Length: 103
Image 1: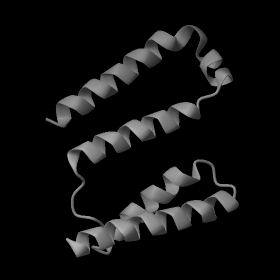
Image 2: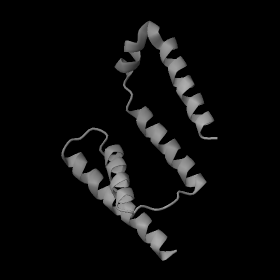
Image 3: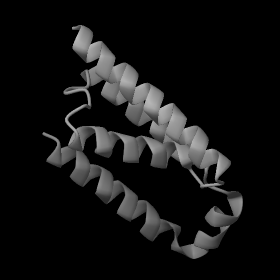
């Protein structure tokens, strides 16, 4: 139990430190990149937490979805113009494939 908590603390501390560093360097979406890189590095070193509780995983996905959604600008949506049905179709298809693959 203590080892599991220590791994989560390590993950959080290193991710925050990397996020701050990348933010200071002006990297866009610094927190997302930091979390991705830190997670990969810790997993390769066998220092990452071994399992994510289901509720925590769902909550994390929701937070990431909202975070990524806040980065969409109005001019990006306007640029879609008449092509929005194609984009929506691809998004829904991707979501459906992801859900079916996860079963």
